[in-house]
Image (cartoon, rainbow, N blue to C red; front, top):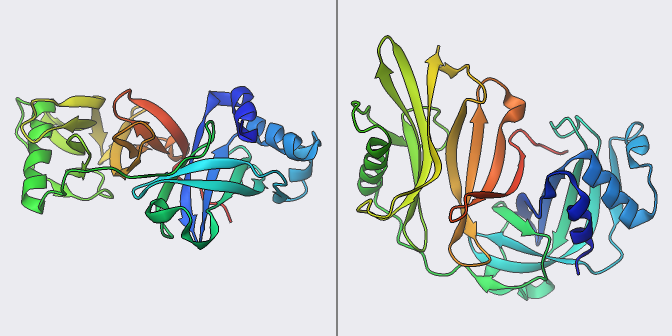
Length: 294
């Protein structure tokens, strides 16, 4: 059983996976929360006073002496990895109010993880609650040509707002409005959108996420369409979430996990990056969108 598993059972939120990125034969994943950091540090060192130490030092690093393992998911598949180092970042250091635990997971040397080992600088999700395993990404639908992707995006938006005229949309994950994304999956396509519509004297932003086939016969909302009034181009209502689809990674049981940004205009600290199972709509892992650890 993984060392991390017992800690996740008592950590706030019960998060059993973590988001991060790959770099030079390693994956760096991050978990936010004082409780998790304190419990994990105590498990590694038998010392209960991590938060006291972090009042005087912005970073505490601990080598992982036991060969604990995890599975790292990426667009390339599932790769086994071994926990080698834990870094504990003081509250406020990484752009999060609470302490951040950074887990450094090393892939097997010599490419033993095969084609499922991700290259550097890609988003990964580490599974921390099950024995490590390896596997390919599995089949995927071909990426749509730009015109076909825009057509599918527009039809999904029109399903959300069938009675209102639609502005011209673009494919751009960084554009806050009149934009969306289309990502191929094994069973169809994932679509996210942020579209503006006139509503009396106001402008309303409609945003949501769906999985669908090309004919929209099997459209299923991963995030139901939400409608927010815009004031000077911003959503001023809490929670006022916009959804942006950043891609997908392999899933342990089949298709893909969606990488979604949940962006809140009214409070940047509430914005978060998530890995979502589209079948169950469950958030598998999450971290503050502004998380940046030195």
